[in-house]
Length: 333
Ligand code: DAH
Image (cartoon, rainbow, N blue to C red; front, side, top):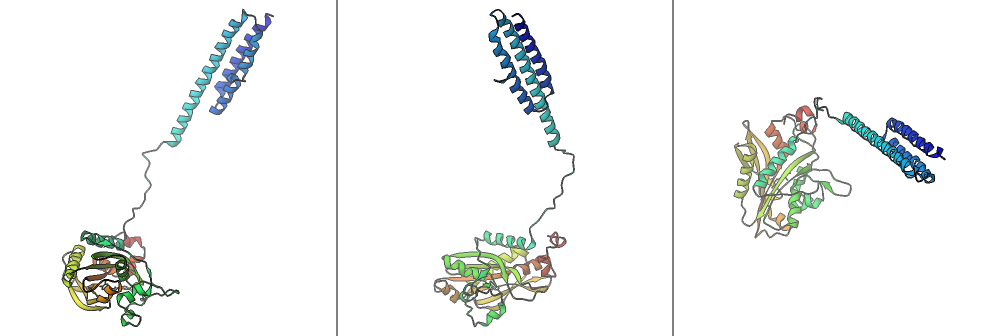
């Protein structure tokens, strides 16, 4: 019988030795956890040995029990030690792979910039917003009604020849000017109206240094009681001066179906007069088309060609450069 307690003591000490060896050799946290379960877990080897203590004498029990406790504590201690070591190693490895070398050269990313046409539009919008105007817009694809008819240009009107465009199979067209936005806006709003509408327009023009089939316009419209040609002139003068500085401007009598009287505005640039926009007092027929009473309201309108402006401002020789996406050109702005 005396053999049994000694045997158990030896088994406990052997378990400690074997366990400590295995634990210190564990190289992942997962395998360490497997060892913990195998030695100290509910169904582990330590438990199996302790269960056999039941057979010991009352005298032997506390002695073996004390040994079992030190073995358990020793195994737990080496588990803790190894876990700390593995966790520390894991953090070190992470630090090594994730550290940022602040002395490394950066990755060069070329800086983009606003396209000169958009820059031009932004600048013009800022000026008009500063004068209390609202920015409006309309669709590029229009009906004949919004692009021509409501603008006092019936189907047989000779002025249609000035703005030949692209017709779509369903009878709609690509708008030839932003003047269509005037009608759309007036249809849904009541006077007083002050809008500035930028957008793309389309013409069936042969492309050359000064013509493009797609370009941009800025449409100006003000409708109120008592607006006169003086208001139109003053507004345009303020705008052109804010845009270009104090250059000489002149108004030339002209013709547009949707304005009466109509004028074209020229800007003197390097000794030459350049035509920069069309304008006039809104024709009473246009006001009638949107249900405004021309006896009560008057209005003025203007249309600027943005590319024209850009060419003047940046002294460009060829409009096609603006669309070519050549960075050597675009970086100059
Ligand atoms: N829509 C005209 C064009 O594209 C420009 C224009 C002229 C607009 C007079 C206007 C205006 O609003 O009043 O040629």
